[in-house]
Amino acid sequence: MEIKKENRSWLDALALSHPLVIAGPCSAETEEQVLDTAHQLKGTDVTYYRAGVWKPRTRPGNFEGVGALALKWLQRVKEDTGLKLATEVANASHVKLCLQYDIDLLWIGARSTVSPFIVQEIADALKGTEKVVLVKNPVNPDLSLWLGAIERLHASDIKNLGVIHRGFSTYEKTLYRNIPEWQMAIDLKNKYPNLPLMCDPSHIGGKRGMVFDISQTALDLNFDGLMIETHRDPEKAWSDATQQVTPTTLIKMMEDLRVRKESD
Ligand code: PEP
Ligand code: MN
Image (tube, rainbow, N blue to C red; front, side, top):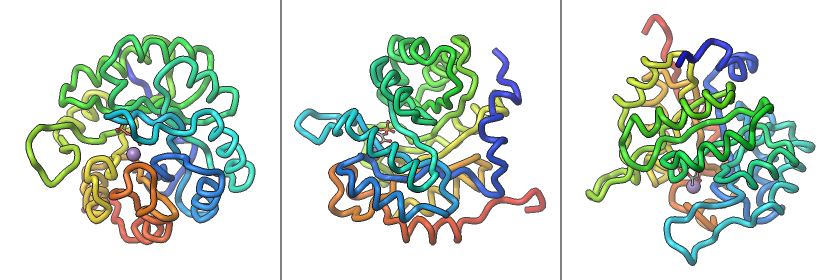
């Protein structure tokens, strides 16, 4: 398989002078929460506004997202702020609804990347569209599973592609919520240099205090962008409360993060 320059044209066309930033809450909770957070990100370096509509919670009984209703709220975000929209999809009906509500970027979550059936179903539902699809690494540290999902999408004619490193599960007690495997991400980048590579420091760290340093490590390694969970009131978030940052913190982080120059 060859990933060509055209496969990253969705990113190049943005002509950004800084890494791509995808930001927004872990979950869309209420219309007010979605719109308020988005308004605070309007006019910043954020290009895509993310919000989970269907939430893949590890254990039942937690908030599982409000579903399609949130797509209406996201549509309002686009109208009001001009931000592009991003959400997670895990089956063909999610994809159909996202197409209906003109979501610009769809990502495949870590729990779905592992399943060739899910990935194929998503690819088939997206056929003939120009949507951007980002593939999060699978929950377990297996490069071939990650490559398999990417190659499956590419083979199904999904050409606007990218990947997100969100770290890997482990049974060991570590500082991280999901351990980063930087070398695996670099190996992936070396294999497919035209495949945009993003980092999700929020799910790697699991704590907001870790987000800046993980983001800086990713930029030092030449990642193309960051996906950072951002909530107007993180402590009251209905999911992932410990790792989300406020819009004010995110804006400050975007100013303080250093981008590696060729001369460094
Ligand atoms: C998320 O982005 O909110 C999410 C559930 O991510 P992951 O698939 O990385 O767990
Ligand atoms: Mn989350």
